[in-house]
Image 1 (cartoon, rainbow, N blue to C red):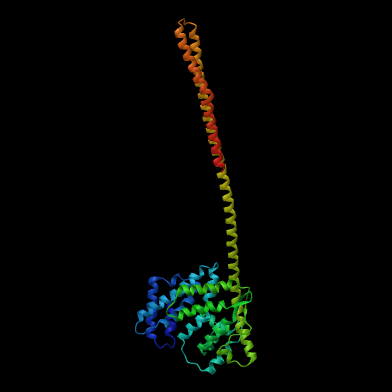
Image 2: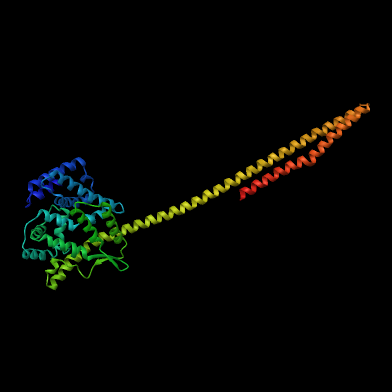
Amino acid sequence: MLSILKNKFLNNNNKNKKSYEEIIDKITIKNQKEMIFDRIPTELLNLTYNLLYISINTNYNKNNIDKTVNNSFNHTKTIIEVIMKLSERIINKQLFYNIIGNNHIIALNAYRIIHSEQVSNEKSEESILKLMELTEDQKYSKLQRALDIVSMGIPNLSKEDKDIMMTFKLIDYTKLSEFISGSVYGSIYNSKNGIKSYSIYNIHRLVYNMAIRASINTESKLNEMITHLDLLYTADEIAVAKDIRESDVLNSIKDKAIMDKVVNNVINNYFNGMKPAISELIKKEAEGAKKIQDKEVRERHVGKMREEEIKKSEEEIKKKREKEEMKENLNKVEEETKNIWGRARIIRDRINNIWDGIDNINNANTLRCILIVVFTLNFISIIYYNESAPKKITQKLNLIKKQKKQKTK
């Protein structure tokens, strides 16, 4: 493609053929090393090379060819990167690339840089009026066909195409550029609740403005394009304005019948050609937004169900843990009770043994001692049973109740 670019520059009446030949050769070598243009989507390639024509003209410095090469290359790359960044917001990228890639403002201004022939006003006006006629298939104007050929780099031309391009070469491209930009693109509006915007014109014009300015604030331009794109997506109407924007081409037409032909053949057909792709893009974006919304609703629903399941599971685990702790505490109380009764039985058995031994003892003093011991042990056991044991059991039960209350809170 860069070789075609080189031939286009050199085969036309360009004053700096040698400089441009060197520029294109160096850009070709630079691209082969960095492979930047090879990574650009196919739908944007023709736009890229048309931008490169304009960038070379914008950054041209006959005293420093290397600087011209680097600046032109980087300039073009920056513009494409802005478009690619913008496309990240788009669901159907290919459709978006087709719309933005077929930019007749860019194509015409790139073409006029290469074709610098001087044309008289009379000849130019005559040629423009010829191009306002419809093509043989009646689909669109000859002017639109000429700009499609220039924009898309169509190589195989029919006889009609060749005749159209012969007429196209006899035009004042500066005036035609004003007509395409202002009267055609600038007359197609989109509106939301009656408020009009000109997003199609603004987006295409922004790309062109980036190409003719050596310095680009990429963040600012990207934000501007996002604003215009969002206005286009949310539009409830896209149409051609009743009052067509003025231009030198329109002002030169005095005959109302010819003016009506220009509006119908050129402007309305331009709009009719754009509308299906734009409507499809808006439709896809709306469908995509709906899918995203539905997905978010589903995710929220699933998330809520999951939260409820987790909460339920946590409550079940908590109840199970409390039940296990209660059982464990009751087991401890039961074990402690058994120990107390065990100790009581031991004391009882000792007392019984003592009574059994009394029968064999005759000594009164010994008997008195034994009775003292018996009464003492009996007294201790009474105190233990009546005070200590119930108190311990009560303490254990109170502790369990207290723990249960705290967990409930």
